[in-house]
Amino acid sequence: MKFDWKTELHGKILQNLRRTENMSQEKLGKELKIAQPIVSLIENGIQPPSSDQVAAIVKLFGFQPFIDGSATKLEANSLLSNWLRHAMEKKSMTVKDLVEKTGLSRTPIDSILNGKDSNPRVRTKEKLQEALGIQIDQDIEAEIKRDADLGVDGVGAFTDFDPYDWNDVPRVPGIYVFYDISDRPIYVGMGGSIYNRCREHEQKFWYKSPIVYKASYVEVRDKTLREQIERVMIRFMKTNAVINKQLVERDESDLDE
Image 1 (tube, rainbow, N blue to C red):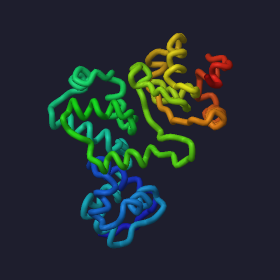
Image 2 (cartoon, rainbow, N blue to C red):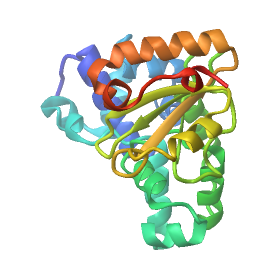
Image 3 (cartoon, rainbow, N blue to C red):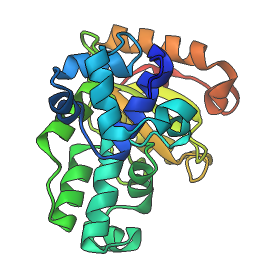
Image 4 (cartoon, rainbow, N blue to C red):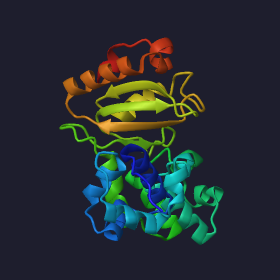
């Protein structure tokens, strides 16, 4: 059976199938006898696979997902979420078990399992690996790092953190975003210390779940660059940043420390 490879559609289907199988781009590349960067180009709809590569892909995953598009209906879980799910099944552990054993709150664990947190803080990953007794594969770590790297000089990796775990809140200069329980960005901020800024927010009536449910940050050491990025992000989000827009008066402490 043959089909015409539609670059964007089938690339996304391939990515979802690979992640569902807890397979890294490197592992898929070995199966297809191509390098990881080529896999990335195919998945992102930039480059179509050759006929031999299509045959190898079909041998791995079958025709049906590419014919009926069923894989596009799958939740596009990250490699990390698939690793955690498989590790929990192997150890017969529940989320409650992990919360008790790691000392983490339920929020970051749920976010990873739901595929909404693909790059948590190093501390979070270390606690999960210790509790489960299973290490994250190096190629999975490498792909997480690649996905998180924004490729902008002076800007660090895009990293998630728990805004209610003060050991997890970063003590670095940068830009941070708060999200509500529906994963909607509601506040963009910046500061010479993200930790200190979050401590200030803690006193505000809105700094509570589910209004502020999770957070992400990028490290940006240059003050001028922080101000520029924050200004652009708020403009792009417009009314989506409901707290920035309606509830917070921006003052000098919001600009820096």
